Image (tube, rainbow, N blue to C red; front, side, top):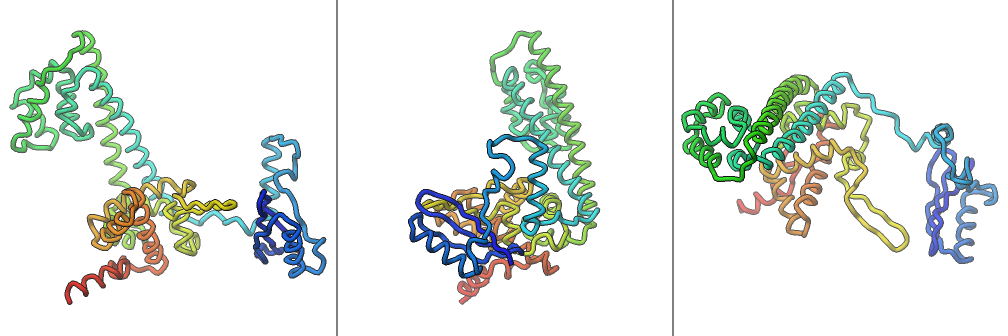
Length: 379
């Protein structure tokens, strides 16, 4: 059986790995840079082969071009040879059902639509800051239907100051908001606050811009609602939906996003750690020489990481066990985001088990400390 030796060369030490024809790691050792280290290397090789000189050692990066030149054709050749020699180190693409692919298409387009709407809302806010700041005091959230309806009806500061309470109430009812006690008066007062004004012709021009942006946002709102409706139908029909929805804090949209990114291939993630690494919730260790750093994982599925962040955020208000875990991480010194990431890591590990075993979420199994605490209080 052939043996292949890889050496990570450094100034103070070398890390050595010995692999056989099947890709099995036979030895992994750190040696020093002195003659003693070289003797240790030969001794390690002698433990696994009759003749250490037969062990192949190569510099793969310079295998094709010593001068460091680059071309797409050579890159393609290198990739083909990497697969030829190291196929065992690469995973095949998962086999995802057409149903799950449909959920993915809808979930991703729904998320893209929300991101696109936010960009337009940011433009709308910028225009309001330029000539209509009172509107921002009246409507802190520019995605609300009531805000968009009133802004479309009164697109300039002059129009806003002319709005009567009766007219505002009618617009609120048209938007489906209704006249909450004091709401119309609050909006009217905010729109009538003295403010710096642009010349009349400039206000008219910016008012046309505002109406155009409002109509774009309204169209986007309708598109997002339609996508969300279709996503709910497609997701609820999937066999994994019941398990995903059984977890506290994981509503239909977030659950659909999780399914969209992990897929429904049961062989894709054989361990919870593999899924955690894919999502980026598991920390990563970077060790070189005497330096060892444990930090957040940057290479990850960002869509899945985003969904898990909001799942953890929601779970702390829906699950006593999740809240307790979050509080313990905060007490240990974690920042808010770090505590949420750690909580997401725990939630995802438990969800992997539920999916692998076809079981619904069980709070007592997910948070055994919660049951112990309840028994202690009861005693």
